[in-house]
Figure 1 (tube, one colour):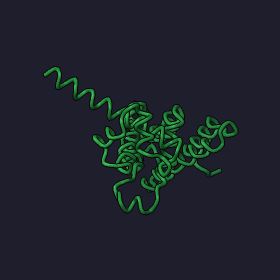
Figure 2 (spheres, one colour; figure 1 turned 135 degrees about the horizontal axis):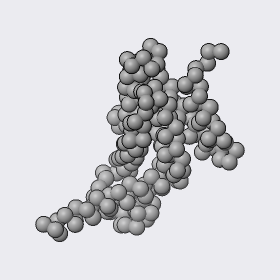
Figure 3 (cartoon, rainbow, N blue to C red; figure 1 turned 180 degrees about the vertical axis):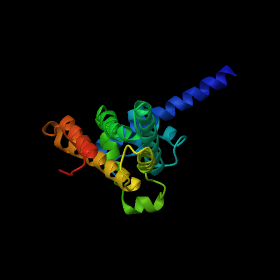
Figure 4 (spheres, one colour; figure 1 turned 135 degrees about the vertical axis):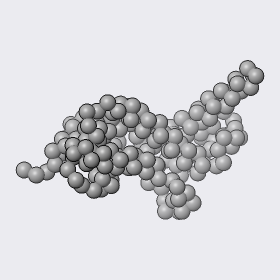
Amino acid sequence: MKKVSQRRISRIDKRQRILEAAISVFANKGYSNATIADVAKKAKIASGTVYLYFQNKDDLLVKCMHELMDSKLTEIKAEIENSPSAREAIYLFFVKHIELFTKNPDFARFMVVEIRQSAEFYERYPSFNPLNEYIEYVQALAEKAVLEKSMKDLDPRALALLIIGAMDLTLTQWLIGGQTFDLQTMTDNIRMILRLGTTP
């Protein structure tokens, strides 16, 4: 029984190593240029081993994206669960997302680049919408904020798209601008605009 358990743990660890290696390879070489052999080399395993866990490169990309986004969303939820209101939780969500992804540039690069796959890719994988859970979560927070009257009555879906779009573009500019892009100031300013609005 113990040997079976150890084998199961070993399989989980190996799968995780492949996912982490793939994120790094895709982030630095781009999905189109990367190969399964590149991922296997990074993970220090044989190329054939990758196919024991993933059907092909497309499947590997989909699993990488979903697992990365799921894990980060779980971390963010834990960080903001004690917010004084749903309204404050929304603003903190934006900040925590930026913080988590900029801790590892490969994660940020992978997310902002590989989410922009071709129309053909989305036709093959219509469920590939890694931001969907993020959008739904922020929308639910907005709906709660309206009900508790910590936020004026507005379209929760529109607000969710606005916030997720701002997060995506902020990370993109940070990756492109490097040292010339003041991430902290921009994050604080966007948060302030979200909180205060644009009415003079």
